[in-house]
Each structure stands twice: as structure tokens, then as C-alpha cells.
Length: 331
Image (cartoon, rainbow, N blue to C red; front, side, top):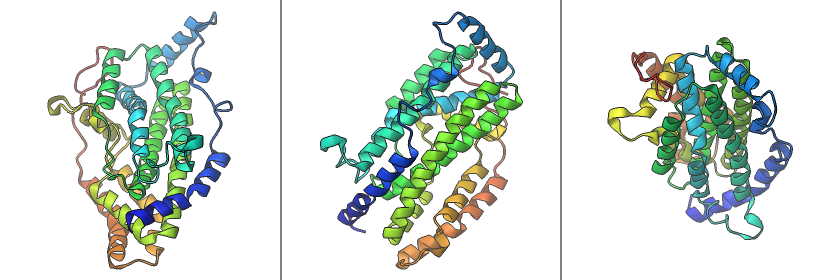
């Protein structure tokens, strides 16, 4: 589809975006805030409650802590993700309009406002835990934002919606599994925190999948080709550039640990492809040209390929335990 026609499709979706915002997104005055889960420094029992946090988190395995910290670092790089979303065609040409722009621009702000609390909450909780080398964490956050983020969507809004649909589901899975491991280790508060964050990631996943489903209805061929393009490129994880020094690649260590403990694995990657193919009824889409049909065939078999690949991938034997106090060694 030509560029101008693609913009017309995005503009035609504004009503759907506005409805989702009004019906599903919680106003700041009614939303939970990080302080709802954290001790109040102004209250007399602050030290006692901090001690409770440290007592509960003490038995959470180091590997789970590294996974949790990596999740938090990923969330804290939020400025890069909003910048990326605002660069998409159909959003970038509307963000400076009167009354704060169109529905897409408003969605960008509302989505970011909700996501911002995730990093805030995890950051403060981990700080109070006493188990984290916060300067090392803060340096990694700054490096990740400094290096930037590129979803490789080429400013294509269709590809951007495919990416966010995939990534929000991946983030949800990661938080859900981290919460389960925290609960298994005896930290019920951390498990609850991971659960409430995962719940919002699920809502955002639902939003992006819904927006993309509308694109499939209006422009099935363009949507199919965009889905195929993103899958052929492979989904780049948001925290990939937390360290570009290949001799000490923090992201590789982080991802190896999440794979090893089952927080986010190669099979999860395959399962997300399978889910999106089913959610958008890829096999039933009509109105495709020759290239669209080829993309449809490719996508229909893609999850199975990744499941087979996941079965052949060897579990990582070693990874550094990063960001922990006195815990930088191999397991």
C-alpha cells in the first residue's frame, strides 16, 4: 500500500483508539501507584516494613533477582520506547496538533504514563531489598537509554503495531513467570507486584492486538506483509543495547539466565508467534495478492519452525550474576 493510503488507514482507526482509551485505560487519579506497595518513610514503622521486605526477598534465588533486575532495567528505558512509537508514520505527523494531537498521540501518552509506574515500583522495591548494586543498575539504565532503541520497523506503523503486540505479550510472560518464582521462594509481596505489572502489560497487549486486527480488516494485504516483515527480521528485545561491549555483554547474560530459569525462553518466542497467528486468524484472511498469500503461507508455518528450533537449542551452561551486591560470578 502506498504511504498516503497507509496514513489514511491509521487515521481511520482513531475512533477505535479513542474508544479503547476511554473504556479500558485508568485515569491517573484512579490508578495504583508505586507508593501503594512500598513503606512510607514518613511513618513510624518504616524501618520495620523495610526489614519485612528484606526478610521476604532474602530467599529469592540470585538468578531470579538478576531476571527481575533486567526486567526493571527494561522498563526504565521507557523514554526510548515512547520516542520510537512517536516516530511511526501516522503518529509523528500528529503529535504537535492543537489539543495535544490525535488519538494516536494521546494513546502514546496514556500508554507511557501507565508503563512509567512499572519501572518506578520495581526500582524502589529492589533498592529497599538491600541485595542490589544500585550504582551498577543505574549505570546500565543510563547506558540503555544512551544507546537507544530500534525495533527495526522502519517507521512503518503496521510493523510497529506487530512489534508492540509481540513485545507486550513477551513482557507479560516474563513478569508472570518471575512472580511465580518469587512466590515459590516465599516473597508474596514481590509476587503481587509482578502480577499487577503483568496485568497491565496484558491490557496493553490486548490494545495493540486490537489495533492491528483493525488494520487487517481494512488493509489485509498490507497487514499481512508487515507481519511477515517483522517476523523475518526477528523481534528485537527492548533491552538489547543495555551494553554493546561484546566482551561483557550484559544483555546476553541476562537473557541466558531468563532462558535457564524459565522466565522467558525460546519456546515462549514460538508460542507468541503461534498466538498472534491465531488471534489475527492469519489462515482465514482473504483479499490477498500473490505476495500476501506467500506471506500468509510463511506465517502459518512459522511457529512450528521455532518450536523445533527451540527443542534443539542447548540450555546455557554459564552466565554471570550481574547487578547484585557481591554476586558477580558464574553459576
